[in-house]
Image (tube, rainbow, N blue to C red; front, side, top):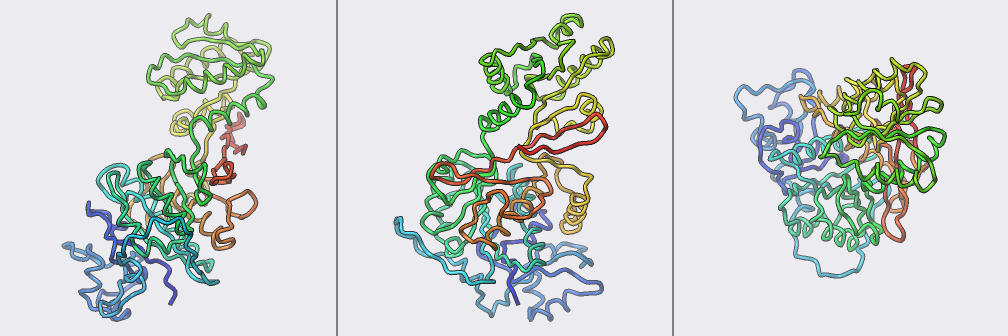
Length: 460
């Protein structure tokens, strides 16, 4: 029997009703989907287990009133009398020498891909809860890949903010990974970077952290770009796409805004090109507000905040002005945060042909998204968190992309455009080499709302 899942406390993820951290030694043989009329006794007998062994692997069975329900998932442990590959792989070993020699691992065709996950997987704070949801998406991807004939052997370690990851990196299971997803915290980056170099492992950094090692370590993939990288990409597109527009900057009087770096850099580019633009303020009178706009050219409006309250005021000002000056042509350039306000602002986004730059796009209405949400609810008995991006979908997209890539190309996988045919639900990915170092995702899109009440995704 192929070992598809070999992950730490998967049953904890499904129930997620305790703040107990992941066990880093107990491993499971596989995950069993409960069929109609099955019993705990029957399942235990099917896998050669005692009832107590099955219950110990699934602590929720000790909950008063627990019922084994059709289509739920339970972890199947190795019998205690059997020394499993998983238990051997997870056993602590002595600290490796501080050598730069690369360890060469052999992996035969058809062997499982050995995936390590080193993220805060706990219920202590928001970081942990978000990463548990992300990890659930990774596991769902592994389940989907099983149907494609791609086996994945997963080892997960809880690495909270204050965690010393040295004991984890001494484990044989960690050294044998082909891919590792993590870390979430910059303080763990230097040690993990050195570790993947020594052991010839590919490291996927899933979220934005300070990782200067990307400049020199060819084993690293970094998915999220810095704010400066995103700003530069959007400004380049702005200069090309809106060359024949009259820019209008609206000061929203938000002292907490972080968007000043973008609007300042964009204004400097316009000044350097000798392009005139209008300046106005949300507190300006209607007449003064309108003076910043061109009556002969299409206008492109840029706010210096992404907050919802100021956006509401800006929309009211624009709607009042266009009712007075019916010939005005106005387009909006927004921010990724505006995707959270789509439900409230959808008609305005359509009306003003809004362009919203982002590294992802979540829509709840596509068939792929609906299917994923239904599967998530079925597997884990709850809905995903209301966040952008959706973390479970992010984990699913990341795992599908990298595991398929590694299955096909091994360590030669670079994530370059055209290598894979994978249609992401939310998170498009394409990578470029950073000098002689690692690979950085450079995906950017405009989510464009068109006046005819439809949307398009523009990749750039």
